[in-house]
Image (tube, rainbow, N blue to C red):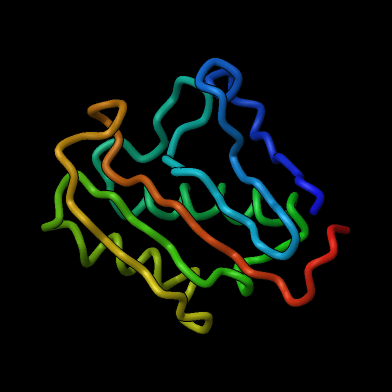
Length: 132
């Protein structure tokens, strides 16, 4: 099967050796995504805004891979403060209320920067399996 690596253009992708998303056949996996543009964290101190920004970045990666949010079957949310679950869940619901993928939300000790509150992964499955 053909493999398509999707880059966000972030310099750390080459340094660490990963892609924002990878599509093989009809499956798209999106790497852990945070609310950061370059060196700037978007929505400092606001888990709702960080979740929305991360999900918008995931949506953009899916589009580059020939998919959409409607193809998402699972999300995984890693959060640094589980007491913020309602605002994180509200933002997730704004993107996925009608789609209703499987999801997981777990609290973690920290993310790569102390300003980051949420990191999200996604899996999408498209009908068929041909790249294009």
